[in-house]
Length: 194
Image 1 (spheres, rainbow, N blue to C red):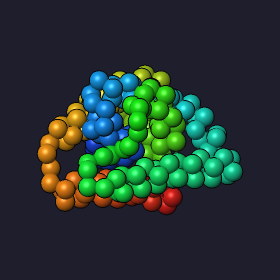
Image 2 (cartoon, helix red, strand yellow; image 1 turned 90 degrees about the vertical axis):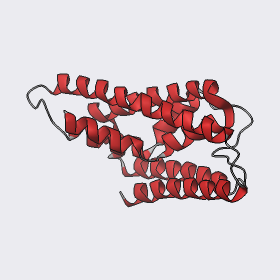
Image 3 (cartoon, rainbow, N blue to C red; image 1 turned 30 degrees about the vertical axis):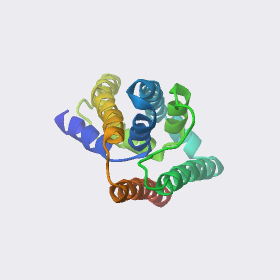
Image 4 (cartoon, rainbow, N blue to C red; image 1 turned 180 degrees about the horizontal axis):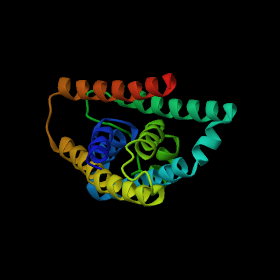
């Protein structure tokens, strides 16, 4: 169970679409507005986990046409985010929008987030610690996952808020934008290779 919790921590702390966009919402709209978005991400991640555990994700992804459609939809969206981040200028702007993304935006991101499917598959079908009771093990894994997932995303949201409050030099702001964009493109690359 400890190895499962450590795996959850290390898989979730790494930058992916969810945490990068969470930091962006915090930087652009503040903590309060970001809570709705994080709630949507959390519900979306739970639904992705259910889809993985029940086999629905495997059934949908076993259709080659559906798999290609979802892969390109997620890759296109992540490339779009990376483009917006990289070319946002010298100001620190993870995302750019007139209105704060909310619960529905968080749900939608998780639905096409390749990292969410990969992480949930690895976590729910690896790290067996109750091989005789899959249902109870799955419930415990959901509890552990959320006990780690929620604070990590709230921390990223807070980091976005804090970074927005800093008066960083233009060069540092530009470097952060490029680093975030490259991280998003790395996620796209990994998804396309998988």
